[in-house]
Length: 339
Image (tube, rainbow, N blue to C red; front, side, top):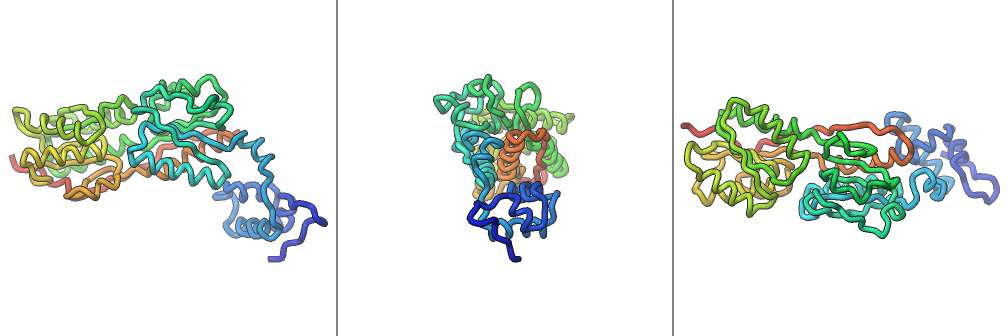
């Protein structure tokens, strides 16, 4: 496509791009702001991008800063840097941010309970907004009382004062796990639950209790690491009385601890004991047999979180979203052993 030159020696504008592509300036703004999907055809979007390249058009970053914020920097607050899930959330958020000329600073707050300290002399001066993943609302007091918009991921949508919320359908994930095990004939369960005080773990526990009503369920809480999970599972599985035939874990890390406990007690997985996890980390396919777990779309979650923050910064009304999850059956779950 031939693109006309802008008037002699002047810097090309969005109006020039619109004229060259035969579209409106609003369409140019949608396409170059990467918000065209569902509003503009693929063909039109391609024509706008080609016109912009042909004219050498570059968005006016100073003007965009007035619309999208001051520093073009967002803070992602997570409970831990050692958990693979949050690494994927960061990857998704950073990719979405980069498309809009933003950067993302990753900041850990211990156990998601905090309180998280302001990592800058003044967060309000250094940031345009905050995304908090799997954090307790009270852990974010350092960012309250500022004008910074807050987007909460995997958190209680009530009473946080956040500008936007996105959640994973963890209740459905737990329903899928328990339905899978019930279909396999299991009726005696151990719920190895995370001891971290977190909305997401409370939701999982509530869903499990509802789905397993009428069966034998014992809940044991443990810190979210392999060593403590191994000790807690060893004590629970060796306790007097009928042994559970299935262990439902709040996280793949806890499931790895159950594997170690089962080996210590001479139990075979899944012949003697079925084990399920949650998250679908790389760990799930490292253990043998591979772990039945719930896959959480972590990168998509981070991307949507960043897009929600950008929408808030541009004045768009926030849309609460819940992302679907999926059960991934593998070799760690099998029929309940005969009594």
